[in-house]
Amino acid sequence: MNVWWTWCILLIFCQWASAAEVKELSGSDFEVITNKGLWFVNHFSPFCPHCRQFAPIWQQLADEYESLENFHFAKVDCTLQSDLCDAHNVRHFPTLKLFVDGKEPADEYPTKDRIWEKLTVFVEQEAEAYNNEPSKSNIIATPGDDSGLIANPHGISIHLDGNSLEAAKQSGLPWFIKYYAPWCGHCKNLAPAWEQMAKDLKRQVNVGEVNCDEHRDVCVNNGVHGFPTLKLYTGGVEHDYHEDRSLVSLVNFATKMAGPTVLKVNWGQLESRLQQEPVALVFLYGDERDANNGLLGQVAQEFVGDLGFYLTSDPQAVGHFNLAPTDLPTVLIVKDGKHVIYPSHQFTNSQTVRQALGAWIQNEKFPLVSDINPSNAPEILQGTHMAVVGVINKDDTENIAKFRAIAETQSKQQKASKSDRVLFAILEGTTWGNYARTAYAVHPNRLPALIIVDPMNHKYYAHDISRKKFSLDDPDSVLQALKVNIPEQTLIGVSTLPFHARMGQSMQEGLGMLRTHWLLTCGAFAALFYFIVKRTNRRRKGRSSVLPVKTGPRD
Image 1 (cartoon, rainbow, N blue to C red):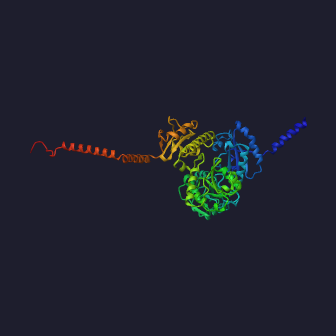
Image 2 (cartoon, rainbow, N blue to C red; image 1 turned 90 degrees about the vertical axis):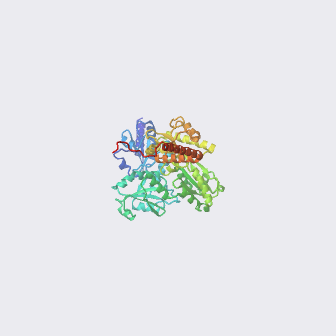
Image 3 (cartoon, rainbow, N blue to C red; image 1 turned 60 degrees about the vertical axis):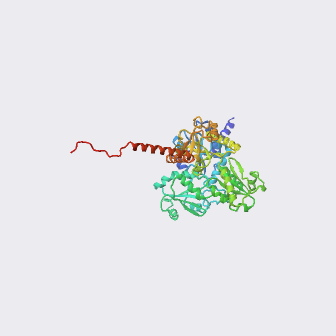
């Protein structure tokens, strides 16, 4: 019996000794420790049942990937480090966040994907992307090679030195670079917008920065004479940025100058991109002449920043979409786990084909639910389609799911009735709370909120027919408003125009009414003129034509 207990104790000790360390971090050492490499951090509470249930999986991950280069696992006890968890916007437990060289990328790890199979894929993809970045190697992949490098995979701005900057410039990939000095006031003011811009340009444009105090010769050699200096490099061409430094202007410049992304890929590379991009266009071909006639590149110019364009002749890709070689060439759009096939197989590079393909892409490019960002905001909020906007915090997965359910119902009704497209989009409450308050009177503390935006008529609707606020728990009122109330103009909308524009609009509407009913208008003006003349003549008759005589004693 003693021997059996000895073996048990030894076995437990060996398992404990072989377990990889999951470092517990605090506010005092977090920045220093996570400053280099990838740190996957579990924010937890020891009193949380979900945290206790997830703990063995987290330890198993750390054991499985203990030898993975530049990838580390850590944890933060939010009952002891509440300030640190508040700084990381932790609102539920457990919350998983990946930190890249001390910076938090755009997205928190989704709660619904907190299972072993998806966690392992995430860890391997992030590690591979990180280890291929220019700051880790002077070799940068070019579009169309076999590396499958994704532009700005983490949504962050990378610190560059002379060697990595030159590698970035020669890569052929678009790079938006900030040359700055830590003491520069304008640079400090730009920093928050630059960081958010890097998040918004995730998987679109690479973003980097050069510290000119540390790399003075690099900045001098690149023509930097003031701080901050912003330059975008793409295809061997340098573009200087001279516009205002607002987030919207920065993102628009980067997406415009970077140009369309048309990549020739194999099935493995395409599959990876389709898992990460909400919408993508795929051109499947058998004959190289179809892929090299310039059609796709020209059409892609119209959709810079909207969706990625990919070409492939890989038989695995053809088979994945249930196509045969006789079906080629074919264009399809992949979104929401499904694909839509372009109805024509005519792909000559002519104006007629370009217009037809462009019109089809314009109609199909929106996913079921879009995330509003500076690139797509003008088209969604000020475009030609009605838009249902959910102002929801990004970690509110329950209400995001309700919003998607409403969008799915509307999509089915829309297809059945062949009615005009209604867009559904989420305006992230934490990032865009101030904008939602200013534009749509949505208070940041009263989320989630639902509004319907009618950009063609410069109005938005926040209440249903019974004057109750639209709610995610009452989807029928939203659908009723879209189908009946707004088209029949039985809902009261709020103007999105500023005061002076509303006055101008009212005057134009008044003039339009006058022009439409010109006969009645002329009669009214004639009657008014007659009344004024009659009244004037009456007053004249009552007056004496002789000057008044001064009365009084004579001299």
